Amino acid sequence: MSAKAEAGETRFDLLKWLLVAAVVVVGVVGNQYFAAEPILYRVLVLLVLTAVAGFVAFRTARGRAVFVLLKEARTEIRKVVWPTRQETTQTTLIVVAVVLVMALLLWGLDTLLGWLVSLIVG
Image (cartoon, rainbow, N blue to C red; front, top):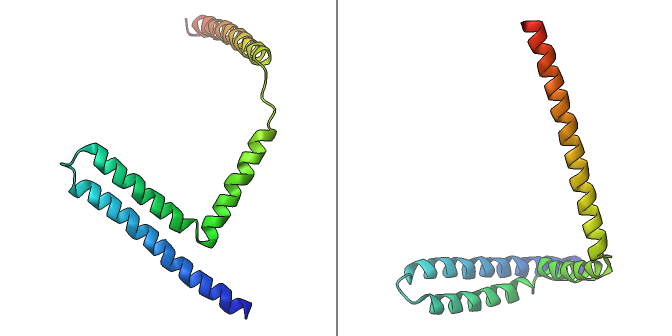
């Protein structure tokens, strides 16, 4: 019995996704067709169509899964310990110092190898 319910849900999900695709196509074609109209009206209509498409998409199983994923991602972002300004400044200075040291080492190595090659070649 549950397999039939899942199959029915999947079939309706397919119809919902087709409706979402149709709304997106209507938005794109309508935006091109009414290109001469003021942009404010076109943007407002596109926002309404986006809201409708999003509402329909979130009514599907995958849409609900995306919504749950977004909620969990927001929870995980809150758990991140961001560095302080002092830590960021110190890390940046360390990176700049290492880059300068490596640049000097590579410049010296390049100069040495160039001098050796010029001695060998003549």
